[in-house]
Amino acid sequence: MSLLLDEVALAAARLAEAGVESPRTDAELIAASVHRVRRGELHTVPDYAFDARFWADIARRAAREPLQHITGQAHFRYLELEVGPGVFVPRPETEVMTGWAIDRLREMDVAAPVVADLGTGSGAIALAIAQEVPRARVHAVEADPLARVWAERNITRYVESDPYTAGRVMLHPGDFADELGELDGTVDLVISNPPYIPVGASVPPEVGEYDPPAALWSGADGLTAIRAVERTARRLLRPGGLIAVEHGAPQGAAVYWVFPEESGWRDTRNNKDLAGRDRFVTSVWSGEGI
Ligand SMILES: C[S@@+](CC[C@H](N)C(=O)[O-])C[C@H]1O[C@@H](n2cnc3c(N)ncnc32)[C@H](O)[C@@H]1O
Image (cartoon, rainbow, N blue to C red; front, side):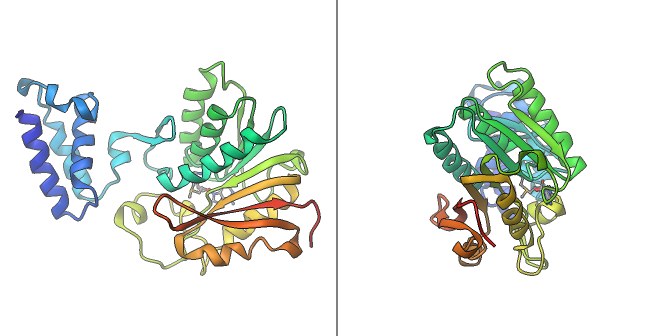
Protein backbone atom coordinates (compact mmCIF):
# COMPACT_ATOMS: atom_id res chain seq x y z
CA MET A 1 0.00 0.00 0.00
CA SER A 2 1.03 3.59 -0.33
CA LEU A 3 0.19 6.66 1.69
CA LEU A 4 -1.66 8.14 -1.27
CA LEU A 5 -3.89 5.07 -1.72
CA ASP A 6 -4.69 5.08 2.03
CA GLU A 7 -5.66 8.75 1.76
CA VAL A 8 -7.78 8.00 -1.32
CA ALA A 9 -9.72 5.36 0.64
CA LEU A 10 -10.38 7.85 3.47
CA ALA A 11 -11.36 10.56 0.99
CA ALA A 12 -13.76 8.20 -0.81
CA ALA A 13 -15.53 7.53 2.49
CA ARG A 14 -15.80 11.27 3.13
CA LEU A 15 -17.23 11.89 -0.35
CA ALA A 16 -19.74 9.05 0.09
CA GLU A 17 -20.92 10.66 3.33
CA ALA A 18 -21.35 13.96 1.49
CA GLY A 19 -23.67 12.27 -1.04
CA VAL A 20 -21.29 12.26 -4.01
CA GLU A 21 -22.50 9.71 -6.58
CA SER A 22 -19.16 8.07 -7.50
CA PRO A 23 -16.95 8.70 -4.42
CA ARG A 24 -14.06 6.31 -5.14
CA THR A 25 -13.72 7.38 -8.78
CA ASP A 26 -13.81 11.06 -7.86
CA ALA A 27 -11.24 10.61 -5.06
CA GLU A 28 -8.89 8.78 -7.46
CA LEU A 29 -9.32 11.36 -10.23
CA ILE A 30 -8.63 14.22 -7.79
CA ALA A 31 -5.54 12.40 -6.47
CA ALA A 32 -4.32 11.84 -10.02
CA SER A 33 -4.90 15.47 -11.00
CA VAL A 34 -3.12 16.88 -7.89
CA HIS A 35 -0.14 14.54 -8.31
CA ARG A 36 -0.06 14.90 -12.12
CA VAL A 37 -0.21 11.18 -12.85
CA ARG A 38 -2.76 8.97 -14.59
CA ARG A 39 -5.39 7.30 -12.44
CA GLY A 40 -3.76 3.89 -13.01
CA GLU A 41 -0.41 5.25 -11.78
CA LEU A 42 -1.49 6.38 -8.30
CA HIS A 43 0.45 3.52 -6.67
CA THR A 44 3.68 4.93 -8.15
CA VAL A 45 3.52 8.20 -6.15
CA PRO A 46 6.13 7.88 -3.34
CA ASP A 47 4.97 8.65 0.20
CA TYR A 48 7.35 11.66 0.45
CA ALA A 49 5.64 13.21 -2.62
CA PHE A 50 2.12 13.20 -1.10
CA ASP A 51 0.65 16.64 -1.77
CA ALA A 52 -1.69 17.97 0.92
CA ARG A 53 -3.59 19.98 -1.70
CA PHE A 54 -5.37 16.66 -2.27
CA TRP A 55 -7.41 17.26 0.89
CA ALA A 56 -8.23 20.83 -0.10
CA ASP A 57 -9.66 19.52 -3.37
CA ILE A 58 -11.53 16.71 -1.61
CA ALA A 59 -13.13 19.34 0.65
CA ARG A 60 -14.34 21.21 -2.47
CA ARG A 61 -15.83 18.02 -3.90
CA ALA A 62 -17.46 17.20 -0.55
CA ALA A 63 -19.11 20.64 -0.79
CA ARG A 64 -20.49 19.31 -4.14
CA GLU A 65 -18.38 21.42 -6.47
CA PRO A 66 -18.26 19.48 -9.77
CA LEU A 67 -15.24 17.23 -10.23
CA GLN A 68 -14.47 18.89 -13.58
CA HIS A 69 -14.28 22.36 -12.00
CA ILE A 70 -11.76 21.04 -9.49
CA THR A 71 -9.55 19.27 -12.02
CA GLY A 72 -10.20 21.99 -14.63
CA GLN A 73 -10.84 19.37 -17.30
CA ALA A 74 -13.70 17.51 -18.89
CA HIS A 75 -13.28 14.53 -21.20
CA PHE A 76 -15.54 14.48 -24.24
CA ARG A 77 -15.03 11.76 -26.86
CA TYR A 78 -11.33 12.20 -27.85
CA LEU A 79 -11.06 15.70 -26.37
CA GLU A 80 -9.74 17.02 -23.08
CA LEU A 81 -11.58 20.31 -22.64
CA GLU A 82 -10.87 23.13 -20.23
CA VAL A 83 -13.91 23.97 -18.11
CA GLY A 84 -14.66 25.99 -15.01
CA PRO A 85 -17.04 28.60 -13.58
CA GLY A 86 -19.30 30.10 -16.26
CA VAL A 87 -19.54 27.14 -18.63
CA PHE A 88 -21.66 24.00 -18.76
CA VAL A 89 -19.70 20.80 -18.06
CA PRO A 90 -20.13 18.49 -21.10
CA ARG A 91 -21.91 15.22 -20.28
CA PRO A 92 -21.53 11.62 -21.52
CA GLU A 93 -25.14 11.65 -22.84
CA THR A 94 -24.11 14.31 -25.33
CA GLU A 95 -21.25 12.13 -26.57
CA VAL A 96 -23.83 9.62 -27.83
CA MET A 97 -25.76 12.26 -29.82
CA THR A 98 -22.49 13.67 -31.18
CA GLY A 99 -21.49 10.16 -32.25
CA TRP A 100 -24.79 9.83 -34.15
CA ALA A 101 -24.05 13.11 -35.97
CA ILE A 102 -20.47 12.07 -36.76
CA ASP A 103 -21.68 8.76 -38.26
CA ARG A 104 -24.29 10.53 -40.43
CA LEU A 105 -21.76 13.16 -41.61
CA ARG A 106 -19.21 10.50 -42.54
CA GLU A 107 -21.74 8.64 -44.69
CA MET A 108 -23.12 11.85 -46.28
CA ASP A 109 -22.20 12.29 -49.93
CA VAL A 110 -21.02 15.88 -49.40
CA ALA A 111 -17.42 17.01 -49.94
CA ALA A 112 -17.23 19.53 -47.08
CA PRO A 113 -20.28 19.22 -44.81
CA VAL A 114 -21.49 22.39 -43.11
CA VAL A 115 -22.59 21.96 -39.49
CA ALA A 116 -24.22 24.32 -36.99
CA ASP A 117 -23.82 23.68 -33.24
CA LEU A 118 -26.46 25.82 -31.48
CA GLY A 119 -25.42 26.72 -27.91
CA THR A 120 -21.85 25.44 -28.01
CA GLY A 121 -20.83 26.07 -24.36
CA SER A 122 -17.25 24.78 -24.02
CA GLY A 123 -17.21 23.95 -27.76
CA ALA A 124 -17.46 20.21 -27.01
CA ILE A 125 -19.79 19.13 -29.85
CA ALA A 126 -18.27 21.46 -32.46
CA LEU A 127 -14.70 20.41 -31.69
CA ALA A 128 -15.50 16.68 -31.62
CA ILE A 129 -17.16 16.93 -35.04
CA ALA A 130 -14.25 18.91 -36.51
CA GLN A 131 -11.79 16.39 -35.07
CA GLU A 132 -13.65 13.29 -36.23
CA VAL A 133 -15.14 14.36 -39.57
CA PRO A 134 -12.54 15.33 -42.15
CA ARG A 135 -13.40 18.55 -44.01
CA ALA A 136 -16.49 19.37 -41.90
CA ARG A 137 -16.86 23.09 -41.27
CA VAL A 138 -18.56 23.75 -37.95
CA HIS A 139 -20.28 27.01 -36.99
CA ALA A 140 -20.68 27.19 -33.21
CA VAL A 141 -23.12 29.73 -31.76
CA GLU A 142 -23.03 30.84 -28.11
CA ALA A 143 -24.95 33.70 -26.48
CA ASP A 144 -23.26 33.72 -23.08
CA PRO A 145 -20.01 35.77 -23.01
CA LEU A 146 -18.63 33.82 -20.02
CA ALA A 147 -19.15 30.49 -21.78
CA ARG A 148 -17.52 31.92 -24.91
CA VAL A 149 -14.29 32.54 -23.00
CA TRP A 150 -14.04 28.77 -22.44
CA ALA A 151 -15.09 27.94 -26.01
CA GLU A 152 -12.41 30.30 -27.36
CA ARG A 153 -9.80 28.72 -25.11
CA ASN A 154 -10.67 25.21 -26.29
CA ILE A 155 -10.89 26.24 -29.93
CA THR A 156 -7.48 27.90 -29.67
CA ARG A 157 -6.04 24.76 -28.12
CA TYR A 158 -7.49 22.29 -30.58
CA VAL A 159 -8.14 24.19 -33.77
CA GLU A 160 -5.61 26.97 -34.09
CA SER A 161 -2.71 24.77 -33.03
CA ASP A 162 -3.63 21.78 -35.19
CA PRO A 163 -3.22 22.02 -38.97
CA TYR A 164 -5.77 19.21 -39.39
CA THR A 165 -8.64 21.16 -37.81
CA ALA A 166 -7.32 24.72 -38.41
CA GLY A 167 -9.99 27.12 -39.61
CA ARG A 168 -12.78 24.54 -39.41
CA VAL A 169 -14.53 25.71 -36.21
CA MET A 170 -16.00 29.21 -36.28
CA LEU A 171 -17.40 30.72 -33.07
CA HIS A 172 -20.34 33.13 -33.51
CA PRO A 173 -21.44 35.26 -30.55
CA GLY A 174 -25.20 35.81 -30.21
CA ASP A 175 -28.62 34.21 -30.00
CA PHE A 176 -28.98 31.24 -32.34
CA ALA A 177 -32.50 32.46 -33.21
CA ASP A 178 -30.92 35.27 -35.25
CA GLU A 179 -27.39 34.11 -36.05
CA LEU A 180 -25.90 32.43 -39.14
CA GLY A 181 -28.30 34.10 -41.63
CA GLU A 182 -25.57 33.87 -44.28
CA LEU A 183 -25.89 30.07 -44.11
CA ASP A 184 -29.68 29.90 -44.53
CA GLY A 185 -30.68 26.89 -46.66
CA THR A 186 -27.12 25.52 -46.90
CA VAL A 187 -26.43 23.66 -43.64
CA ASP A 188 -26.10 19.85 -43.83
CA LEU A 189 -26.58 19.15 -40.13
CA VAL A 190 -27.83 21.14 -37.13
CA ILE A 191 -26.97 19.80 -33.69
CA SER A 192 -27.86 21.23 -30.32
CA ASN A 193 -27.77 20.42 -26.64
CA PRO A 194 -29.88 23.39 -25.54
CA PRO A 195 -31.14 24.19 -22.03
CA TYR A 196 -34.11 21.88 -21.36
CA ILE A 197 -34.86 21.75 -17.62
CA PRO A 198 -38.35 22.97 -16.63
CA VAL A 199 -38.10 26.06 -14.43
CA GLY A 200 -38.50 25.06 -10.78
CA ALA A 201 -37.41 21.40 -11.25
CA SER A 202 -35.07 20.07 -8.60
CA VAL A 203 -31.46 19.38 -9.64
CA PRO A 204 -28.33 18.17 -7.74
CA PRO A 205 -26.09 20.87 -6.19
CA GLU A 206 -23.33 20.23 -8.79
CA VAL A 207 -25.82 21.32 -11.45
CA GLY A 208 -27.92 24.03 -9.77
CA GLU A 209 -25.02 25.85 -8.12
CA TYR A 210 -22.32 25.49 -10.78
CA ASP A 211 -23.72 25.04 -14.30
CA PRO A 212 -24.71 28.46 -15.67
CA PRO A 213 -28.48 29.17 -15.47
CA ALA A 214 -28.61 29.93 -19.22
CA ALA A 215 -27.45 26.36 -19.86
CA LEU A 216 -30.18 24.78 -17.74
CA TRP A 217 -33.57 26.40 -17.53
CA SER A 218 -35.99 26.69 -20.42
CA GLY A 219 -39.57 27.69 -19.58
CA ALA A 220 -42.31 25.90 -17.63
CA ASP A 221 -42.13 22.69 -19.72
CA GLY A 222 -38.39 22.87 -20.47
CA LEU A 223 -39.07 23.04 -24.21
CA THR A 224 -38.73 26.77 -25.01
CA ALA A 225 -35.16 26.52 -26.34
CA ILE A 226 -35.86 23.25 -28.19
CA ARG A 227 -38.73 24.98 -30.05
CA ALA A 228 -36.34 27.85 -30.92
CA VAL A 229 -33.77 25.32 -32.19
CA GLU A 230 -36.50 23.78 -34.41
CA ARG A 231 -37.37 27.19 -35.93
CA THR A 232 -33.70 28.02 -36.54
CA ALA A 233 -33.04 24.59 -38.08
CA ARG A 234 -35.88 25.09 -40.58
CA ARG A 235 -34.20 28.17 -42.01
CA LEU A 236 -30.61 26.86 -41.84
CA LEU A 237 -30.98 23.34 -43.28
CA ARG A 238 -30.86 22.48 -46.96
CA PRO A 239 -33.52 20.02 -48.15
CA GLY A 240 -32.46 16.59 -46.88
CA GLY A 241 -30.40 18.16 -44.06
CA LEU A 242 -30.45 16.56 -40.61
CA ILE A 243 -31.10 17.72 -37.07
CA ALA A 244 -30.18 16.17 -33.72
CA VAL A 245 -31.38 17.82 -30.50
CA GLU A 246 -30.84 16.62 -26.95
CA HIS A 247 -33.57 16.63 -24.30
CA GLY A 248 -34.30 15.35 -20.81
CA ALA A 249 -35.20 11.65 -20.41
CA PRO A 250 -38.91 12.25 -19.72
CA GLN A 251 -39.29 14.68 -22.67
CA GLY A 252 -38.96 12.17 -25.55
CA ALA A 253 -42.64 12.14 -26.57
CA ALA A 254 -43.03 15.92 -26.26
CA VAL A 255 -39.89 16.68 -28.31
CA TYR A 256 -40.92 14.17 -30.98
CA TRP A 257 -43.97 16.37 -31.64
CA VAL A 258 -41.83 19.50 -32.01
CA PHE A 259 -40.74 17.94 -35.36
CA PRO A 260 -44.03 16.93 -37.08
CA GLU A 261 -44.50 16.11 -40.77
CA GLU A 262 -46.82 19.08 -41.32
CA SER A 263 -43.96 21.43 -40.40
CA GLY A 264 -41.78 19.82 -43.06
CA TRP A 265 -39.96 17.20 -40.97
CA ARG A 266 -39.55 13.59 -42.10
CA ASP A 267 -38.47 10.42 -40.30
CA THR A 268 -38.50 11.98 -36.82
CA ARG A 269 -37.09 9.53 -34.30
CA ASN A 270 -36.46 9.18 -30.60
CA ASN A 271 -32.93 8.00 -29.78
CA LYS A 272 -31.58 6.58 -26.54
CA ASP A 273 -28.52 7.30 -24.39
CA LEU A 274 -26.17 4.63 -22.99
CA ALA A 275 -28.51 4.04 -20.06
CA GLY A 276 -31.35 3.22 -22.48
CA ARG A 277 -33.31 6.44 -21.77
CA ASP A 278 -34.81 8.68 -24.45
CA ARG A 279 -32.14 11.38 -24.92
CA PHE A 280 -32.22 12.99 -28.35
CA VAL A 281 -34.53 13.46 -31.28
CA THR A 282 -33.36 13.33 -34.89
CA SER A 283 -35.20 14.35 -38.03
CA VAL A 284 -34.74 15.16 -41.72
CA TRP A 285 -35.75 18.53 -43.21
CA SER A 286 -37.88 18.11 -46.34
CA GLY A 287 -37.32 21.65 -47.58
CA GLU A 288 -40.88 22.88 -47.17
CA GLY A 289 -43.26 23.18 -44.28
CA ILE A 290 -45.60 25.52 -42.49
C1 LIG B 1 -26.78 22.70 -21.98
S1 LIG B 1 -25.55 23.82 -22.48
C2 LIG B 1 -24.69 22.82 -23.71
C3 LIG B 1 -23.30 23.27 -24.01
C4 LIG B 1 -22.54 22.31 -24.96
N1 LIG B 1 -23.18 22.25 -26.26
C5 LIG B 1 -22.46 20.94 -24.37
O1 LIG B 1 -23.18 20.03 -24.82
O2 LIG B 1 -21.67 20.73 -23.43
C6 LIG B 1 -26.48 24.97 -23.48
C7 LIG B 1 -25.69 26.15 -24.01
O3 LIG B 1 -26.54 26.91 -24.88
C8 LIG B 1 -26.33 28.30 -24.64
N2 LIG B 1 -27.57 28.98 -25.08
C9 LIG B 1 -28.80 28.90 -24.51
N3 LIG B 1 -29.70 29.61 -25.23
C10 LIG B 1 -29.03 30.13 -26.28
C11 LIG B 1 -29.41 30.94 -27.39
N4 LIG B 1 -30.68 31.33 -27.55
N5 LIG B 1 -28.47 31.28 -28.29
C12 LIG B 1 -27.16 30.87 -28.14
N6 LIG B 1 -26.75 30.10 -27.11
C13 LIG B 1 -27.66 29.72 -26.19
C14 LIG B 1 -26.07 28.37 -23.15
O4 LIG B 1 -25.42 29.57 -22.80
C15 LIG B 1 -25.22 27.12 -22.95
O5 LIG B 1 -23.85 27.40 -23.12
